[in-house]
Length: 284
Image (cartoon, rainbow, N blue to C red; front, top):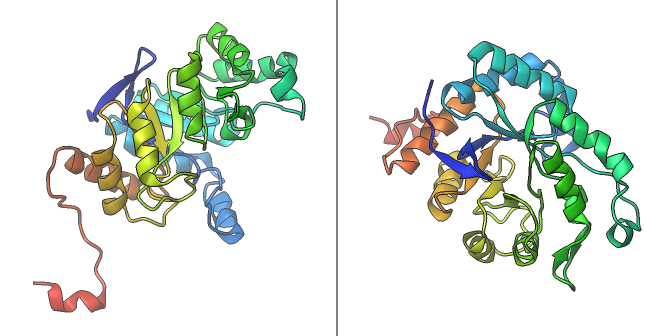
């Protein structure tokens, strides 16, 4: 098995690269047609397991997804069985909200069964999804409302709490208020894709964070090539921060792993280049 660089989050060792899951679950951030293709392509959990297996064998044992999704859950089980590697699952469940949740708090009777399933399926970390978290972010009072009770319930079930967010302010407010979280999700890529603040401002917030930051969409959902996107990510983050990368094939997984190791070691990549007829004049 490989030995990819690691960090420590909430007292738990994790790989610095994470296995992303948007492709697996049909979220392309591109077109409905591409979403449909992804749903069809990954309808069999074994295809997802083929990709996860490559990461596991390289020492990338940490994943981010919603483990309550049956397709992904069975893919993880399959990959664990093939490799003997125990997955470190960072799960991002959505929690039910209403127009009153930010004022009155979560309906914990509805939340607790969701958290129970997260724990039952082996989530090491539980980070309420951006679709929940960002509704609770109050820019006026500079706090993430009503999340302390949820974090406590996560802890009670033996999981480490964090926040999945698309708002960089979440990191600042959680730190300022001492919210019991061990990490945060933050969108970060050189293109600024889906980022609500400029790239330099987002980097500043990440570097000032009191906890390790889990960055997502380093390749801007496929709009940035791996060399550019990963070189930027690995060279502008702190040593404790993480990068989640999604892939569509086992060979893509092998490439982003090798490329990342080369970047982190300051080596020139020896990955095979793609060849087209127009490159005939520059080939030996």
